[in-house]
Image (cartoon, rainbow, N blue to C red):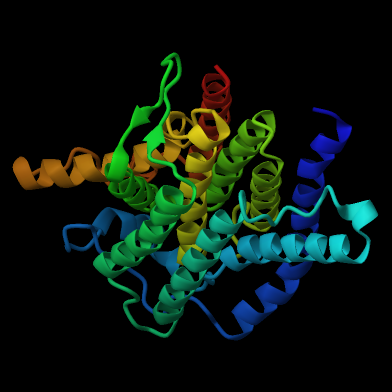
Amino acid sequence: MNTVDAMRMFVPALLAFLIGVGITPFVTHFLYKNRLWKKRAGKTALDGTPAAVFNELHESREVGTPRFGGIIVWGSVLLSAGILQLLWFIAPEVFENFAFISRNQTWVPLAALAAGAWIGFFDDLFEVQGKKGLKLRVRLFLVAAVALLCAWWFYDKLDVSSISFPLLQAPLELGILFIPFFVLVAVFMYAGGVIDGIDGLAGGIFSTIFAAYAGIAFFQNQMDIAALCAAIAGGLLAFLWFNIPPARFYLSETGTMGLTLALTVVAFLTDTLGQGHGITVLPIIALPLVVTVGSDILQLTAKKIFGKKLFRVAPLHHHFEALGWPSYKVTMRYWVVGVVVAIIGMVVALL
C-alpha cells in the first residue's frame, strides 16, 4: 500500500462529496417547486393497523418535506464514476489510477445501486402523486429479483458458492444454497432501510457503513471496490450536510433501496473473493440496521402471540423518541454506536 493507493479512495470520495454539494441546490429547488412530498400524512404499521405513536411523533413532518433525497447520493456516485472514467480515457497517464469502473469489481455493485435507485424512485413518485406507492410485498419481490440476478452472477460467473468465517481455516461451502442465502441477506438489509425515519439518522449510519467497507476493501487490495465505497460515503456526507435537522429532504426509497442492495453486493465481494470476512462482519458493521429489523420482527411477533407491544413503537429508534428522547439525541447516539461497531467490524474482518 502506498500514497497512490490511498488517493484512489480519497479522490472519488472528495469528488462525490463536491458533486453532491454542488447539485443539491438544483435538486432542492426542483423538489420544492414541484411539491414532491407525501400529500397525506400518516403511516401504517406492518400488521396493517395505523401507526398511532409514530404518526403522533412525525405526522407534521411527513407533509412538506420532499422525498427523493437519495438522488443526491446515487447521482453524485454515478457522476463521479463517469467523470473519472472519462478523464482516464482523455488522459490515461494521469487518471489511470482513479477510474474505478471495472468488470471484476464494481460492475455488479454499481448495477445493484442503479437498479435499486430506479425502483425506489418510482415508489417515491407514486407516493408524491397521492398514491400509496408500491406495496411492501411488491418492493420485497423486486429487491429479491435484483438480488437473485446478482447472486446468479456470483455463483455462475465468479464461481463463488461459499462464505468465510474468522479463525476457520476453510470457507463454508454452500453450493447452490449460496443463491437463496444471498437473496435473504439482501432482503434483510433492505428491511433495515426503515432507519430512514429521523433527520440525519440514515445518512450518518450508511456513510459509516460504507466507509468501513472501503477500509476493508483497501486492505484486501480491492482498490476499485474501496473507491466505490468511498465515493458512496462521500455522496452520503453531501446528503447529510443538508439533512442535519431540520432535514431538507428524505433519503426515501430511491436512496435506501439502492444503498442496501449495493451494500449486500459489496459485503459478498469482500468475503471469499477478497479472501476476507465481508459477510461475517456485516451484522457487526451494519448493527444499527440489524437492530432496526430485529425490533420490527420482535414487535410484530409480540403483537401476534401475546396481543401486546414489546416497544412503544417500532423500529427501536422511534421507541426512544416515544420515551422522550429528542430526535437529535437519538441520531447522535446512533452515530456513535455506528462508528464503534464499524471499527470493531473492520478489526474482525482483518483477523
